Length: 376
Image (cartoon, rainbow, N blue to C red):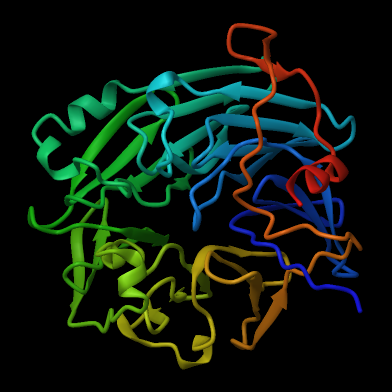
C-alpha cells in the first residue's frame, strides 16, 4: 500500500496550468487539472524552526519563481525551464529565525519584498540580478517606539498594492504605512486613537477595513474622509492559545478576500470566520466557512473562487461565490520510499561561491534521492 505524504503550502503562483509552491526545503508543483503533485527541486539546504516556513513563493518573473526568505537566510530565484537557481544571501543583520519577510509586490519591473519583522524593505531587480535594501524609513517610524517592539516577531501586517503604492499596517500602533516606489518614501498615517493596533487590513471601493484584534474592533477609514465607521464588540475568540504563547491576538486573521460587496475574513487562529457587508457595514460570523482555519493567504482566481492556504494543515480550501468549501489535501504523488515531513532536516551547508557582489551559487546541487538517502 502506497504511503501518503502531505505537503504544506503558504503561498503559491499559477503558471501554465500548474500551481507552484514551497514546502519545507522543496519547490513543488501541482497540476491544476489532475491534482497531481510532484517535487520540482530541492532548493534550500537549511534548517528552519518547526511551525514556520523557510521560504514562501510570492512572486513570478517570466519562467522564474521568486522564493522570498521567511526564516531562511537567502532569496532564491528559480528558473523552472532551465532549472537554474540563483541565490541571494541576506545582510548579516537578518541572520535569525524570525519571519523576516512574508509578502511582495511587483512594480516597475522590481519586486518590493515587504517585512513582517525585518527592519527594512528588500528590493529585487530580476533583470539585473541585484538586491537593495531600504531602511531609513524604519528608524524614523520607530524613533519613539523602540520599547514597544523589542523581540516582537510580528511587526507589520500583510502588505497590499493599491494602484502603484504599497500599504502595510503596524501591529503595535495605529500607524498605516504607505510606501511609494517612485521615490522610496514612506508616509505614516495615524488612524484612530494611539492605543489602536492593526494586525491586518483589507481595501475595497476606497475604504480601508483595519482589524484591531487586541480591542476586537474593525475601523473603516477613507483617505479623503478619515474614519467613516467603527465596529466594536466583535467575537475574536481564539484557538490554540497555548501553542501561540500569548501571540494569538496577532494571528486571529491574516488575510481576507471579497465576493462583490462582501468581505470575508477566514479564520487563522480565530475560532470563527467573519464577513463584512460593506453596504450595511454589518459584521457577523460566517457559518459557511466554519471548516476553514489556519488561513494564511487568500487569492481569488479567474473563476471567482477564493483559494485559501493553511498554515496549520496540509491542505487548501477552495471557496466558490456560493460559499461552498472544497478542501484539497496536498498529497505528494511521487512514489518514494521515504520523504519524511518535508521540513526541518538539518542539511550540512555546501560551499558557497560568490558570482557577483550579492549573487552566490552553491558548489553542488542536492537531488531528492540524495536528500532521502542522507536523512533516513
